[in-house]
Image (cartoon, helix red, strand yellow):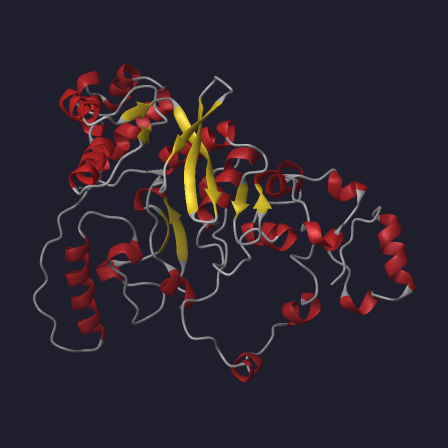
Length: 377
């Protein structure tokens, strides 16, 4: 089963308008047509699981009505599957054996309900696999119609690095990766001055921006979830600590200046940067290097600071290649800017005390002047 672009557009329109009829008007189609586009995705998945002998405890749908055809709804009802609409999963209940239940909240009701289960399947969308392109320092850009940050490419998938071509999921979420791959192979052969097969035409595929759809999900999660919900599991950074830009709890950092800071006030100093947030809160700094929370953190920052998602830079992460020996890194020439600011985060002096100032009278002066707003190395 595959979700096509038109189905994603329908989901986006329903989230934007909170109405099937209004969504149809927005898309230029009728309300029944909208319903047909999106109704069967979740139901078909549940029925396939049932056919394979698995038990489906419930379906949880954030929209106000079941997204399935009458035939699928009847089949699910006949097999005892409950559908919770206008509802969001806010917590997984666990014990030593794993998941024991999903705690859900109905929009606008304030209460919660416990759904016993041993597995929770939760998905909002996919993102391009750009780790290799990032490790190669290919020039990246945000393309909502391609799923997020992608390498910027030209003819044949040519990236900003000569001889490097991108196709398929690493170039964005498209419906014609096979044709992309053939075009990239021909371009690579031509680059190597080999004999490339004759070019073939690649059909143009309509691309739809999935950003509003993801933002609608994040708004629902922010509205239903508790402040202590973890935004970064590896480092155990809660949503409240992320948005409050709080230092790690183990530092026991007490500062009036830090306490008055949050994502919105930090934005006044300049555009929000997930790497800056990472260094201040450790969100995204765990073993997975943000692979599980990078998109969620970016969406959260965008929503709460009223910043376009495209303006939130892509967070850095550990390259998916063999680690480099230190002697190779040591051979890289540092720029004068790197040499001047190697011990200061982003050049924001209120976030760091330069290493060569620690233990000097200037350190005490800096701390006193900023009401304890400095952090040590």
